[in-house]
Length: 274
Image (cartoon, rainbow, N blue to C red):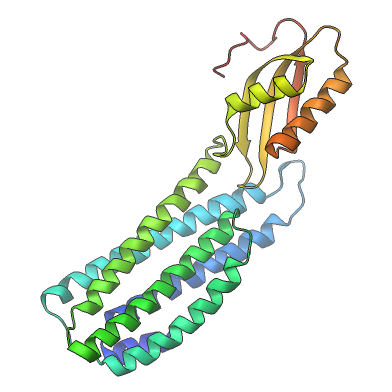
């Protein structure tokens, strides 16, 4: 980051200065991700029966991603606009050297993060941050080469603007996914109607499922609560075991709270809409 600041000032490159600013926000975002992993290791207690994993792996990633969006893409657009009208001189040689160095660092960081758990929002968010800076370095290199060959300075703010828009678009999905988990939405890979159909088919003793609620503690920890109407002659323990096994085998749900019923649901009508 420091090298890019110096290189950006010396060369007059907006792309380098913008990339350096994003490295600062990336440092903060990666620090938040590290902090989240550390806190998430704490064991559950009486006040937090699920532990700290929810807040640390969803809220922290959502907030740092929003910060990234608000602090990166807009400043690229604001700084790039005046330079498109009145291009500033850029020293392409120093710009190319510094951008190449930054590219090497960003590639190394991205390779490390890309080897992590792709379903974890922290890893995805951290990788997205680094990818943004990697693209910023590529943009700076391309701009430097174009300026060296043609002298066309507007390429620098143009590419800076393009990278900012690309980062914003990529971050939208991550923010949406984090928000979906925070709102305890049903995981995208699981269809409640499919759960009803396949469980009743897999467990003959189950007549109907209702009050079915599926959500996620994190992207990799789906949870379900449900009421199951079972045949009057069915054994409760055997049926519970079969439902739990089917949920785990068919949908990867290892944590389920199940209420077995024989005739009428004590919590209300047995509808398929709740």
